[in-house]
Length: 294
Length: 310
Image (tube, rainbow over all chains, first blue to last red; front, side, top):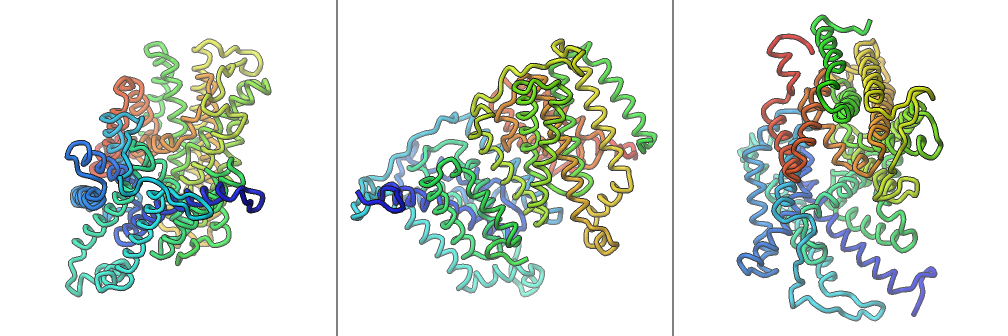
């Protein structure tokens, strides 16, 4: 067995992979938060709950309708995204003229309702969701064994993240979106239906969260608390990266996952707090965040 | 002396009368919990109601205050009043640290940073040896107040808690209606203007934050002595959410709002406890309803109805 810095190689790479996987979820979730924040100016506290709903949606599709993983990966984001659009239309849109804090409070309340309802129905012990047959097993990479599903999560998350980035930074639709983020009334005066764009953006952000939820279902057990465990860390990630840049939130998400994984190897006691420590340091040195604009 | 308006004086007298009579009607331990939570919410209200700072991390001060008070009373053998002061001091130190970091960003970022820092405190409490991890610190002795008055009896403890609450309440009210408090309100209304008038707004925010954190620590410490236990629940972010809910429901920026909110929410948690998660659902629903339909809260709406400032 070979050693790196006095740590057995497989252990190091194993934790790095786990870190990358967590990083993939951080990236997907903080990306959705950043897109929603940019246009709607609300911090979507319900993001964690919607992530959890994505995982449950996949589980329900399999349990009640016999629809497998691959279709769930497509269907769950659409279903939960539609639910998000419903929330935006009926509740969130009433708050745009008020202080942004009310948006935070509203979505916090929504998260409580959603998580409470799921806990009532399914308990908090968690439900198993099996890895799809085509991704079972592991591959020998020479320096470590990589479970196929975990590799797939990292790759899939990276593809979706960069597709979103390209959509926002490289297409006409994305240009409109960015313009509306800067100055919504001006874009509206050019004849763009901004309210509809806002609604669809919220739906898309929620869809990203649900997609992450489906990816997470086979790794973590599907349980009502899975979202709230993630969301606070994701907030820290967002503060570190700054919400100004799409690419920034992707890089920060993956990067912090890796930092967390490495901490698990070298100083396990600090692994749950390291991201918050990084946040404190970044606030001291660059208050606007690594990629943020004041 | 405390800057009460006439309607507020009447409200205050009614509150005192209720505090004095209710332990003969209701269970004192329940009332003590209400008073501790009410003090916590009043401290929180100083920030959200009068400075416009949304802290989502107040559980850190409340919970850590509880842990350190429990530790001081149990391991160091301090008297209750000193133990509670230790809790307050911890709140102050943590508050200073939080404010120092979080004031660098504004608005929603401020809320997220305080939330993240509080979560860090939560994980610290989960790992640190002195907190007892999942078990918490149990069997904390209530001790003798000033070394003389035994607090073992619920009634003695109740009057002590009531005293702490009233002192805290009056202190906060005095602060809000002092020249310092006027500057805080100016910051809430228009920060750039307050800066242009020559006020160092960051200093004001920091002082208000530390004050609020100190009182939150005292409230948490008192609660730990009442129940003889300090656990992870009080540092968890759901506690931060609770205090936001209490203040919002009672009325942001009203002096009696947090007290009424505390009474409602603690009663709900107490009497609906058997329904498990439905409590969370109900609380969430109250959040949604408050935000959408009555943002001024119970006391704010009542005040609006009677055209009084309460």
